Length: 127
Image 1 (tube, rainbow, N blue to C red):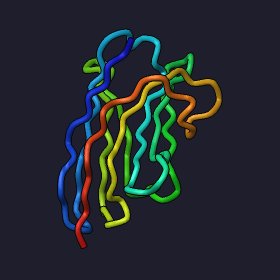
Image 2 (image 1 turned 180 degrees about the vertical axis):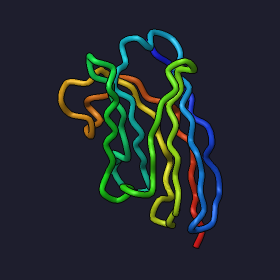
Image 3 (image 1 turned 120 degrees about the vertical axis):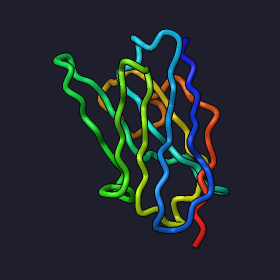
Image 4 (image 1 turned 30 degrees about the horizontal axis):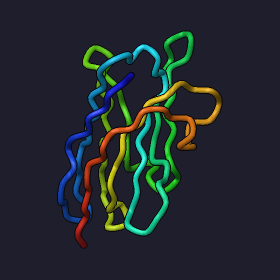
């Protein structure tokens, strides 16, 4: 089992920045794929960003088109923590953000690729 705890959400004005953190505990060795998703009221949960490691310990980051160039995902293995740096925030980024972990099998953007989920943290961007 893997437990995920998100933090760092809050209220920010458009154009501002936030950094989300996701601390993982438990059997983290089984989770080479870490991702962030978000869900706005009345909408489906959508992929935001992911980071995965290869057998040669090279890390690959992927982003949804809507956040590319504004958001950056990173991980600190020593702390078992994944971060999502969000810059140039827009009101459309308002949502509950979820951290997720899984084992990469070829698809990084689908919720089915992730086994473990955090409780979510609210991000609200005012105009």
